[in-house]
Length: 595
Image 1 (spheres, rainbow, N blue to C red):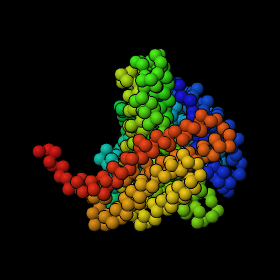
Image 2: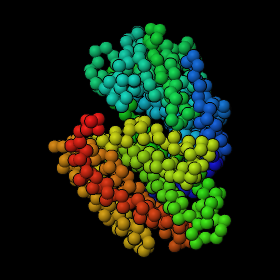
Image 3: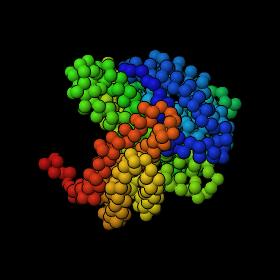
């Protein structure tokens, strides 16, 4: 497996071209944020990712985690790397300063988190789940709960989990059976939870489990779910650790990928019930979990970006190292990077990474504006944009990552199928990203149901207005104008798809559901290409001004042009699948497959 080098130039350019960095830095609370500070943070994070985390990625995949008598051991080096990660303050970076974090904008923390995920995705999941648990407690916990748990969770001394689903439930949390009974001013939880990422491990002294469970007499379905805190070790009022709680890791899953991330089956209450405290009010647990859903889905979408970047870097290095055959029109001895189809594959990988990164960073910047802007109208518009794009970031970026990682294997040829090269690990690690934190279909149904139908397509039409503004502003440089002009047809298909969904959802919801995933992909391609055009526009301006590295900037134009010719045409096919093909799915009887 090749080394990982954080693409800092690409990251900084993306922050400037589509992340509206100056606007985010000017938001209330961001007064100390500067380009120099961000550059320094990225440089140091890149070193840690490349020198500490990346070397553990393949050995961790090979060794995996071990579970014996309820105790989980992580692969060699992981515990030491986590200690160094926390000592340098990286674990605390996304969190609030009042709990010991850095209070950095989402736009700044997002590229750093991409580095962790690209260098060692399995390792990064521990921080991601902990940050999600911190957010839930911060938003909905009592002052006592915040004071007791958050400082040590932010520091990484304690980590966090989210115990949501159960064997019979899957994605349907209405089927959750775990129950809680009062015990003085606390509760006792009994039940089994599955797919608990970093649910048991040896890298921190305590694990703070957030658990969804039902109280007696609670309403049926998701309206009767409450949220509880159940620590691995009970915590005394002074913050010291007490007795072991009545919860245990029954086993860890044997998975396709992310082997160094322990995915636990957690058993609560084998000896009377796990001690827990209620978060917020009863029966509002799922509502509370959704408060950090946008960030969680952004971060999983970011995994798609990160794995794609890592697979691309490895494929690129191999393509320049491997000599096989004589590329057409080239001298003998040229590496396979010069073969036309390998060039096509590398360009496809790179252009998709550029579009995915742009979409993730743009959405992160809108999160910052929505949360921090003093202008209520601006904040509401940004929040509507976030709500529209989050399912696309999660679904489109992760689906792309599976394809990009697969292409990376293809660039390697037969050697890509051999585990020792490391290319296969990226493919295996990428595969889970389309499933957890809501499958692609769940994201797509959210896009058409909650994000398009609910507001009558208003947020989608606002996006079209902004895309049209980019096209109008790109009339200067001929090449950029041509790239922007390519948005015309796809924009119409996007608008018509929105109208089709609005026209058919009421009378034929199964038909629009059958069109949901194609609609998600169509939206991702159009939004991603729109942002590539914005990047190309800035690159053209900088080239004209003689600013920056010319080859780097020319690359931005090349990647946008490739995307326009090879990916953007897929919008028409997706539109036809939406408007003409969904009925074929709706009318199909699966029993025919069993006949």
